[in-house]
Image (cartoon, rainbow over the protein chains, first blue to last red):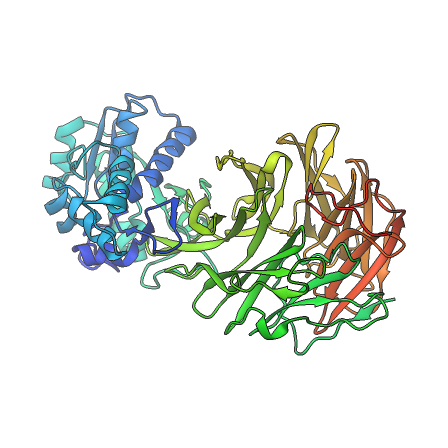
Length: 253
Length: 378
């Protein structure tokens, strides 16, 4: 998911739609389509990402089995879809979410309708009629709501945690946070930046359980080379006190 | 006695199931592919002695860089799916055998028919084909890729041809961020159900498609790694649908696993510990007997074992010592004087061999892996 300007020079920023589009390109018609046209594809959109976030939430609950009263901070959450599922499906009501991406902050209250229309038009269909309208209706269904809806369903705070003021504003929401989760954040940071960020998370509440959801290094698989891809073992060697969860295999280390 | 087939240039090493097949005139066929052509090769009266030819090769499927192809026989037709790596296009073609009205001709219209050209080409183009009793065609293939957080993930999709029109890109495996995902085989089961076989980082999986096109749940049949036989052969065991997979795990470990009416059975190891890692094993059934052909590691021979209705695998028997095969395809066919285990294998050439395994089937058949029964001429 989205990455975030925690530090001055992350390897990659997600400040604009183009930043997201470059790293998210997802087929949006898993039920198939006529062979006479191309597939409608989306980027970092609710209709495309929700299935992944549903799985993330389910796995988090399965792996850690926290009490639903657990106070959780999630950082780098994009539009906070994983947090949304944790809350609405699994009953975790004490979650605060942050993401400092200007694109996320400026669009979280907007709907995705225009992007759906553009993706449908790109394969030669009219999103307002016939097959194009049917495709759009499926996308609306896949985003989990009837009609056009906001990208997020809960507030995503614009907090970097990099200073006492920012951390205090987070504390004011829930008090003593018990679990701090980064969601697809660490691979965009250099090793030193990563260590800085986990220090900021720790300062929220000393001894907080720090958990990192990350895509792993995938040998033989095309991966954006600008990222700091590592295996779980390599991350663990860098921060032995932290817990790392692979979004690929769900291995926990 | 191995027979080296007539062939114009080096075949592609990546290929799926290719029979061999037999028609009602007792003619034996197989599929070969090179970079620019897909050929159906046909044997003379005795496929171990007589020349093999490539009928109607002037009309055969053509491409720029074929990397994978599979075939299935249905009645008098051989249905072919091929992946042309140049442009990443999956194509469908049909060949009529000698007992077909076309008599050894490629179809007049269904040659190089595009199934899908994925927008973002897959890492590799494994593709497999099945035909239902109503003529609908099902193709399992590596579809478009999805990029999430700067990482490309291959999908496994299926396509369906009904009344001449394709529906494509139907996702079979892709929910999740697993690497190393690709299609590994297909088989038609009972009641026009089609079984899909694929692998991903977490292991090997099966998933069934009902006759009404409803996808079943994923069944994990193995752990990580390994390579699978391209065909899931089906047999009926007293009304129970039995599908059998074969998986080469290590040089000392090949295992089969059955589903019975969709319920996974215990894995069964083949006899011995002498298996080569390169070619995928090939599996075929005859009634309730299953055969797995493979390359042994010590002598590099083509070898097979037999299991009777899920029982322990039996003696290790050599099929051929002619060459060091890099790919093997096997089928049980009624041919010549009886029933044979027919094997096509290749190095830089293509070879054919057959082992007599008994009298003609009762009732006789010539449509392997299909429920259609056709009487052979005697």
